[in-house]
Length: 294
Ligand code: NAP
Image 1 (cartoon, helix red, strand yellow):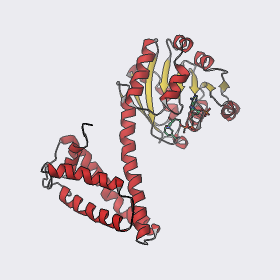
Image 2 (cartoon, protein in one colour; image 1 turned 180 degrees about the horizontal axis):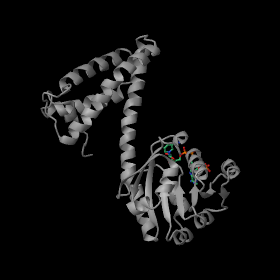
Image 3 (tube, protein in one colour; image 1 turned 90 degrees about the horizontal axis):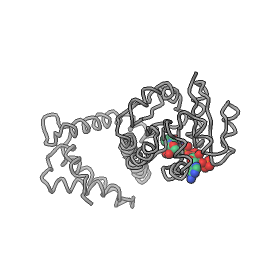
Image 4 (cartoon, protein in one colour; image 1 turned 90 degrees about the vertical axis):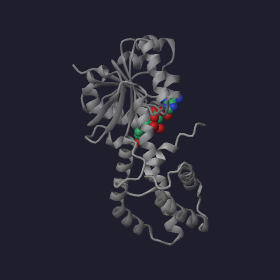
């Protein structure tokens, strides 16, 4: 007999989670602040609970997916719910900070529940597919004994550590990487538009350049991991070469009146490293200059 599962929060992502659970045959109870959003899920076989407390009472596993931890806290932190979660597994798939996850884990443990925190590394259309990735941290036993449920949510749901804040920490790290690429793309678009280069040409040239960038990213992570900051015979490009090219970009942006605030931030990191004698160091040496102490 499959376990009964409750999903609190049926926005875009929560609804996708519910649809996957229903497809895999789990008895699923839902609760959402705006009741209408549960209607399509009821048509697929979900039951609606009239209150959060009744939703918690219905499920052996309680999956939470609301906007942020402030909402999770407002929904769960009351005496009746604290009593109702005893012996249950709470899986919070809401995005948040590592400290938010640690705080939630502490509260759940204090009230006799088991807690797993998850970071969804996918859009709703990926949920329940082979490529659906969710990172989970917290008690490994709770993850292993419910692996069938996690498998229903995606083919790549991974337990990445006992420490509950780990999934959110890795989520932020990967988002930093993603935004680096997306904001970089905005700058590239602005430069092309200012220089009257058709954006189709940018797309074509990016296809050719992308493998080079992918290689640089992999190399940077490897070198930072090994602490190989001095230039050596495997260095792909030195700080001085990167910094020189960055000055060309800054000059072009200034002449075309393109916002330089982000790129000036890159320049400041280069300058800190250069002041410490890393002009000819490997680009990876910059990884030592991001902690500002502020
Ligand atoms: P969404 O469609 O805007 O849904 C937000 C959900 O949170 C709704 O169910 C909403 O209820 C509920 N909510 C917000 N504040 C609440 C409160 N104070 N009390 C009760 N319920 C509250 O957002 P979503 O895309 O599903 O995202 C949900 C979570 O998944 C977020 O943490 C997001 O970062 C994460 N996530 C989303 C994606 C994505 O691609 N969408 C990807 C990765 C992670 P109402 O319906 O009543 O407003």
